[in-house]
Image 1: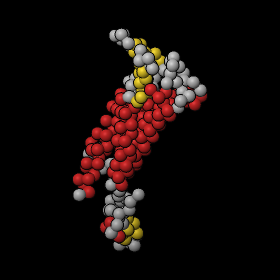
Image 2: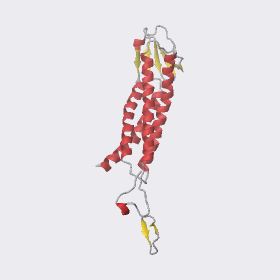
Image 3: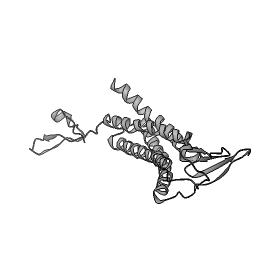
Image 4: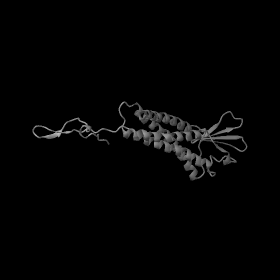
Length: 224
Protein backbone atom coordinates (compact mmCIF):
# COMPACT_ATOMS: atom_id res chain seq x y z
CA UNK A 1 0.00 0.00 0.00
CA UNK A 2 2.72 2.49 0.95
CA UNK A 3 4.65 1.76 -2.26
CA UNK A 4 1.59 2.48 -4.46
CA UNK A 5 0.79 5.63 -2.48
CA UNK A 6 4.38 6.84 -2.80
CA UNK A 7 4.27 6.27 -6.56
CA UNK A 8 1.08 8.24 -7.12
CA UNK A 9 2.07 11.07 -4.80
CA UNK A 10 5.42 11.47 -6.57
CA UNK A 11 3.63 11.57 -9.96
CA UNK A 12 1.10 14.11 -8.63
CA UNK A 13 3.76 16.75 -7.89
CA UNK A 14 5.22 17.26 -11.41
CA UNK A 15 1.78 17.20 -13.04
CA UNK A 16 0.38 19.74 -10.58
CA UNK A 17 3.50 21.90 -10.83
CA UNK A 18 3.21 21.97 -14.63
CA UNK A 19 -0.45 23.00 -14.41
CA UNK A 20 0.44 25.77 -11.95
CA UNK A 21 3.26 27.03 -14.20
CA UNK A 22 0.83 27.29 -17.12
CA UNK A 23 -1.93 28.94 -15.07
CA UNK A 24 0.23 31.53 -13.30
CA UNK A 25 2.19 32.41 -16.45
CA UNK A 26 -0.98 32.81 -18.52
CA UNK A 27 -2.70 34.83 -15.80
CA UNK A 28 0.23 37.24 -15.53
CA UNK A 29 0.43 37.70 -19.30
CA UNK A 30 -3.24 38.48 -19.96
CA UNK A 31 -5.12 41.72 -19.27
CA UNK A 32 -8.03 39.86 -17.73
CA UNK A 33 -7.57 40.41 -14.00
CA UNK A 34 -10.49 42.81 -13.83
CA UNK A 35 -12.78 44.59 -16.25
CA UNK A 36 -14.64 47.84 -15.85
CA UNK A 37 -17.38 49.32 -18.01
CA UNK A 38 -18.07 53.01 -17.69
CA UNK A 39 -21.52 54.05 -16.43
CA UNK A 40 -22.39 55.23 -19.93
CA UNK A 41 -21.36 51.78 -21.29
CA UNK A 42 -19.41 53.57 -23.99
CA UNK A 43 -15.98 52.37 -22.87
CA UNK A 44 -14.79 49.08 -21.37
CA UNK A 45 -11.45 48.72 -19.58
CA UNK A 46 -9.61 45.40 -19.32
CA UNK A 47 -7.06 45.46 -16.52
CA UNK A 48 -3.93 43.33 -16.24
CA UNK A 49 -1.02 43.35 -13.85
CA UNK A 50 1.14 45.16 -16.39
CA UNK A 51 -1.29 46.67 -18.92
CA UNK A 52 -4.66 48.37 -19.23
CA UNK A 53 -6.62 47.92 -22.46
CA UNK A 54 -9.53 50.07 -23.59
CA UNK A 55 -12.46 49.12 -25.81
CA UNK A 56 -14.70 51.78 -27.25
CA UNK A 57 -18.21 51.04 -28.53
CA UNK A 58 -18.07 50.78 -32.32
CA UNK A 59 -14.31 50.14 -32.36
CA UNK A 60 -12.90 46.99 -33.94
CA UNK A 61 -9.69 46.98 -31.90
CA UNK A 62 -8.53 47.84 -28.42
CA UNK A 63 -5.83 50.22 -27.25
CA UNK A 64 -3.40 49.01 -24.59
CA UNK A 65 -0.93 50.90 -22.45
CA UNK A 66 1.29 50.17 -19.48
CA UNK A 67 -0.45 50.01 -16.11
CA UNK A 68 -0.46 53.64 -14.94
CA UNK A 69 0.80 54.66 -11.54
CA UNK A 70 -1.94 54.12 -9.00
CA UNK A 71 -3.06 56.93 -6.71
CA UNK A 72 -1.28 56.78 -3.35
CA UNK A 73 1.66 54.81 -2.00
CA UNK A 74 -0.53 51.97 -0.72
CA UNK A 75 -2.21 51.42 -4.08
CA UNK A 76 1.12 51.66 -5.85
CA UNK A 77 2.64 49.07 -3.51
CA UNK A 78 -0.23 46.66 -4.05
CA UNK A 79 0.17 46.82 -7.83
CA UNK A 80 3.95 46.48 -7.74
CA UNK A 81 3.77 43.54 -5.29
CA UNK A 82 1.35 41.75 -7.60
CA UNK A 83 3.62 42.36 -10.57
CA UNK A 84 6.77 41.11 -8.82
CA UNK A 85 5.29 37.98 -7.28
CA UNK A 86 3.48 37.09 -10.50
CA UNK A 87 6.98 36.50 -11.90
CA UNK A 88 8.29 34.62 -8.86
CA UNK A 89 5.35 32.20 -8.68
CA UNK A 90 5.79 30.42 -12.05
CA UNK A 91 9.57 30.38 -11.55
CA UNK A 92 9.30 28.55 -8.22
CA UNK A 93 6.65 26.21 -9.63
CA UNK A 94 9.05 25.48 -12.49
CA UNK A 95 11.89 24.68 -10.05
CA UNK A 96 9.52 22.35 -8.20
CA UNK A 97 8.67 20.70 -11.52
CA UNK A 98 12.34 20.08 -12.32
CA UNK A 99 13.12 18.65 -8.86
CA UNK A 100 10.06 16.40 -8.87
CA UNK A 101 10.88 15.12 -12.37
CA UNK A 102 14.39 14.28 -11.24
CA UNK A 103 13.02 12.42 -8.21
CA UNK A 104 10.54 10.52 -10.40
CA UNK A 105 13.03 9.61 -13.12
CA UNK A 106 16.09 8.90 -11.01
CA UNK A 107 17.13 5.24 -11.08
CA UNK A 108 18.97 5.61 -7.78
CA UNK A 109 17.34 6.29 -4.39
CA UNK A 110 16.76 10.01 -3.89
CA UNK A 111 17.47 10.89 -0.28
CA UNK A 112 15.84 13.36 2.06
CA UNK A 113 17.93 16.43 1.19
CA UNK A 114 16.74 16.74 -2.42
CA UNK A 115 13.15 16.07 -1.43
CA UNK A 116 13.35 18.82 1.16
CA UNK A 117 14.43 21.11 -1.67
CA UNK A 118 11.18 20.30 -3.48
CA UNK A 119 9.23 21.12 -0.30
CA UNK A 120 11.02 24.48 -0.08
CA UNK A 121 10.50 25.53 -3.71
CA UNK A 122 6.83 24.47 -3.64
CA UNK A 123 6.29 26.50 -0.46
CA UNK A 124 7.86 29.62 -1.99
CA UNK A 125 5.80 29.08 -5.16
CA UNK A 126 2.58 28.90 -3.15
CA UNK A 127 3.51 31.97 -1.10
CA UNK A 128 4.28 34.01 -4.24
CA UNK A 129 1.08 32.80 -5.88
CA UNK A 130 -1.03 33.86 -2.88
CA UNK A 131 0.63 37.27 -2.59
CA UNK A 132 -0.06 37.95 -6.29
CA UNK A 133 -3.83 37.61 -6.22
CA UNK A 134 -4.24 38.92 -2.67
CA UNK A 135 -2.37 42.09 -3.69
CA UNK A 136 -4.70 42.51 -6.66
CA UNK A 137 -7.73 41.83 -4.47
CA UNK A 138 -6.63 44.57 -2.04
CA UNK A 139 -6.05 46.95 -4.96
CA UNK A 140 -9.42 46.24 -6.57
CA UNK A 141 -11.37 46.49 -3.30
CA UNK A 142 -9.68 49.72 -2.21
CA UNK A 143 -12.06 52.50 -3.19
CA UNK A 144 -9.21 55.02 -3.15
CA UNK A 145 -7.27 53.16 -5.85
CA UNK A 146 -7.88 53.60 -9.55
CA UNK A 147 -6.21 52.90 -12.87
CA UNK A 148 -5.56 56.14 -14.66
CA UNK A 149 -8.64 57.86 -13.16
CA UNK A 150 -11.21 57.31 -15.94
CA UNK A 151 -13.95 59.90 -16.06
CA UNK A 152 -16.88 58.99 -13.78
CA UNK A 153 -15.05 55.99 -12.26
CA UNK A 154 -17.39 53.86 -10.14
CA UNK A 155 -15.54 51.13 -8.15
CA UNK A 156 -18.73 49.09 -7.73
CA UNK A 157 -18.66 48.34 -11.49
CA UNK A 158 -15.20 46.73 -11.31
CA UNK A 159 -15.43 42.95 -11.83
CA UNK A 160 -12.86 40.16 -11.56
CA UNK A 161 -11.80 38.37 -14.73
CA UNK A 162 -10.40 35.09 -15.97
CA UNK A 163 -6.77 35.82 -15.01
CA UNK A 164 -7.75 36.41 -11.38
CA UNK A 165 -9.73 33.14 -11.37
CA UNK A 166 -6.80 31.20 -12.88
CA UNK A 167 -4.39 32.53 -10.26
CA UNK A 168 -6.74 31.67 -7.40
CA UNK A 169 -7.23 28.15 -8.79
CA UNK A 170 -3.46 27.73 -9.16
CA UNK A 171 -2.98 28.63 -5.49
CA UNK A 172 -5.64 26.09 -4.46
CA UNK A 173 -3.83 23.39 -6.42
CA UNK A 174 -0.46 24.71 -5.25
CA UNK A 175 -1.56 24.31 -1.64
CA UNK A 176 -1.52 20.54 -2.10
CA UNK A 177 1.97 20.42 -3.62
CA UNK A 178 4.08 21.22 -0.50
CA UNK A 179 1.87 18.87 1.52
CA UNK A 180 2.48 16.02 -0.92
CA UNK A 181 6.19 16.90 -1.13
CA UNK A 182 6.45 16.73 2.66
CA UNK A 183 4.73 13.33 2.61
CA UNK A 184 7.13 12.04 -0.05
CA UNK A 185 10.02 13.49 1.95
CA UNK A 186 8.92 11.39 4.93
CA UNK A 187 9.05 8.27 2.73
CA UNK A 188 12.63 8.97 1.57
CA UNK A 189 14.96 6.01 2.14
CA UNK A 190 17.58 6.60 4.85
CA UNK A 191 21.25 6.48 4.02
CA UNK A 192 23.04 3.42 5.37
CA UNK A 193 26.31 4.01 7.16
CA UNK A 194 28.75 1.20 6.45
CA UNK A 195 31.34 0.56 9.17
CA UNK A 196 34.07 -2.02 9.54
CA UNK A 197 33.71 -4.59 12.35
CA UNK A 198 36.50 -5.33 14.76
CA UNK A 199 38.64 -8.43 14.49
CA UNK A 200 41.75 -9.79 16.17
CA UNK A 201 44.49 -11.66 14.42
CA UNK A 202 46.78 -14.29 15.89
CA UNK A 203 49.21 -11.66 17.15
CA UNK A 204 46.47 -9.94 19.17
CA UNK A 205 46.21 -6.92 16.85
CA UNK A 206 42.72 -5.40 16.95
CA UNK A 207 41.30 -3.84 13.78
CA UNK A 208 38.27 -3.76 11.40
CA UNK A 209 37.13 -5.89 8.50
CA UNK A 210 36.51 -3.55 5.52
CA UNK A 211 33.09 -3.22 3.86
CA UNK A 212 30.87 -4.97 6.44
CA UNK A 213 27.52 -3.28 7.24
CA UNK A 214 26.83 -2.28 10.80
CA UNK A 215 23.82 -4.62 10.86
CA UNK A 216 26.17 -7.61 10.97
CA UNK A 217 27.66 -6.22 14.16
CA UNK A 218 24.68 -5.18 16.25
CA UNK A 219 21.58 -5.78 14.09
CA UNK A 220 20.94 -2.14 13.24
CA UNK A 221 21.96 0.30 10.54
CA UNK A 222 23.26 3.71 11.37
CA UNK A 223 21.16 6.33 9.64
CA UNK A 224 21.19 10.09 9.38
